[in-house]
Length: 107
Image (tube, rainbow, N blue to C red; front, side):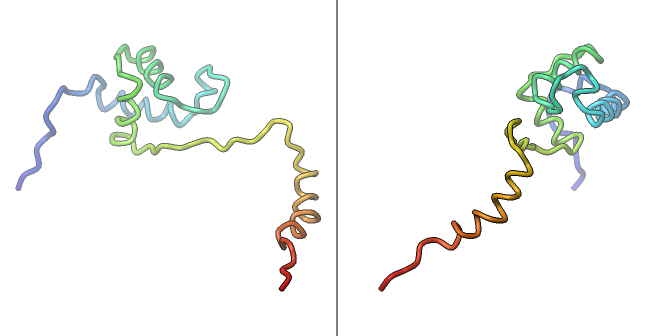
């Protein structure tokens, strides 16, 4: 059985534009003026609108990135800014092993 193109509206972007978008996304958001290194649907939709003049729904653009460019959903690790890595390491080596043992069982 021959494979056919899926029904629906054709892409707003050409194959060359998709390649350029892929390159831009891999450069990271900070390279394109954002404060954090996190791509979101609205950010990608805005980038596409500014660079290529095409409007994509921010909710839909996430699916397009997955199916067309192979990106996957990622959730950033949350780490407190105040975290002192030295104190944390010391606590894990000294206090945590005792806490992990738990209380002693009595018969």
